[in-house]
Amino acid sequence: MTDTSQTHTPSAQTNPSEPTEPAPTTPPGSNGSTRHAAASALSSGGVVRFLEAYALVLITIAVAIFFSVTHPASVAFPTINNFNVVLGNNAVVLLLALAALFPLVSGFFDFSLGSTAVFSSVLCAGLQTKSGLPLVVAIIIPLLVSLVIGVVNGLFVTTFKMSPFVTTLGMATLLSGVTIWYCNGRTFVLDGSSALISFGSSRWFDLPAVFFVVLIVAAVVWYFFRHTPYGRSLYAIGSNATSARLVGVPVDRNVWTAFVVSALIAGFAGILQLGRQGSATAVDGGTLLFPALAAVFLGATAIIPGFFNVVGTVISAIFVSIAVSGLTLMGASGWATNVFNGGALLVAVGLSTYLGRRKLRGQG
Image (cartoon, rainbow, N blue to C red; front, top):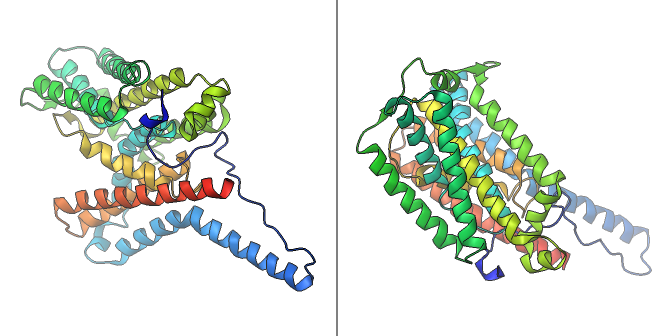
């Protein structure tokens, strides 16, 4: 695999949770006043680093307050019901964002994740309503199909050295066509007594159960990236695949696995989406993918600026959901949501790339 196939995304390092920074230096012969000035500068630097890491958290709180006091959103936005809707809708976006982390951390894009989720949702619904299969079988088959999709993507990228952009975009187009063919213009509606619908609408501690499921997945992914050799190796590959290979990292195998895990999580996201909505039809996978990508790149500007990270992704996904909910309650047209998601993605990519390059310059 050559570095030219990798995306120029925020940098990664072996231990991203502890990014290094150049040590402050003091001129020779400094006296007490200069030491005081250095301490002040260090304090100021700490404030700047704090604002860089937690600016998105503060912005999220500010946006929530704004919609809570601004009419007409203030009527419904600050209610428990809307809060549950935001968390429930955020669950699928966040799960797709977590799926996207795996290839992105290793330096690759996967544009087929949204289409994988949509096809998984449609297939799960169709197997129950069209083929009459039991729920367990109808869940296992889409997950296996998603696994195969990841295997194919990973093989094309690592074994055949195809561009990940072309590979996953082609897979997304293929899945979109297959989904349209399978639906044949119809919408699959689950029976109201389906256990999947019951779970999708259930609450734990008066909050959507699906959100807790996604938080559990997020915790597992966080532990995976921070505390396992394989997770850290993906950061090393994303930073410099050639160097990672020279120190013995099985680059191709690990990248292939990243595509497989990513597709599997995307398939699971589609099934959760079906449980939330109770129906499935052929829709554009981009409607799910782009908010997720916006969350991932926006998350790379928070908590550990310049690095893709799980906690930042969770916070940014909540921010995107809050903003979209507020805009909807303000009476914004349907195009406003697309404009916001697209704008957020552009800004997030720009900021995260800038922060990643600045980190590299600081470590150089």
